[in-house]
Image (tube, rainbow, N blue to C red; front, side):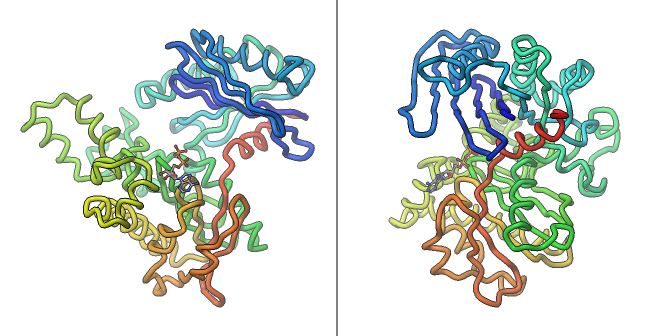
Length: 399
Ligand code: ADP
């Protein structure tokens, strides 16, 4: 069975076509600048990537182009759309009601539309992608996989913010958590790698990319996570501040005359590694500058590393210890120096890594970097959100 996985952003549409017989990616690509021009990059294994500039007026037009490429004689990998058995959609926000990956129905789309006020950036493109698919691939099962649903089981005292309760009840302001598909995938992969049932493991998963989040997974269930009402909360990220005293926001508005949108841009797009270092949002560049002695780059790295450590410590406390620590995503999978700094002086928690193995790790596979005899298993696990979406989609497609 072949499954198409779609991930719609505000002006982009990423896609991957999986052959579920063997989990192989037959083709993948990205439509960008939707609504403002348009480009398509289409890749197949063992073939030169195809690139074009074309007019992509909306997500529907982009999807039509993707389907045409997937079935084209020159660049295609299937002879007809009918070969696609189901479509899996990445949806960032499932609100409070949607607790797991589900088949898409009209009433689900209506519910997703009600979430747009709390999910203004990702909601509309995801809904547009779903609607386009339902129109162009009528009759093909459509499944939605939510970033938030892994957190649907966390307890109220971990998701209700200590502000007047009416804002939770009436306005649904609460912790939702994001990156759930990645945390779910890597925690399951860790259990498989160490050969233990996930039900017996307390795991802290660190998804460290441009956006970063840390999750406590106890017995296979997420019990707490660093991102909150939006992906803004938690540790320092590429351009996001992560958690700061909320009064900083109102103080800036009062003293500088900034609008709500201006402050949001500051904490969302101009902060984090970029804001502190003044150099880049890319951790590689900031780390390199820190190595060369740039003080602000060193400060940015220290803020990032300390934030990760604090969350690991907090989650060890919440779970009464940890059995495994996982690093994933761009930084977690690639930047050995950051992993080493995070794991330094963590013997108290049972975390000790083999520095040689950490530096000379093998990319692209689950890789054990624990020191021999360490109480906590510390692993690099490459994340694969798209494959996780494909697995859920296959399971729910009824095929
Ligand atoms: P996103 O959150 O946008 O998906 P990624 O998971 O790709 O981001 O992570 C981006 C971050 O990962 C950047 O800060 C970058 O420095 C780091 N990174 C990505 N690839 C590498 C690599 N090959 N080597 C070192 N760092 C990398």
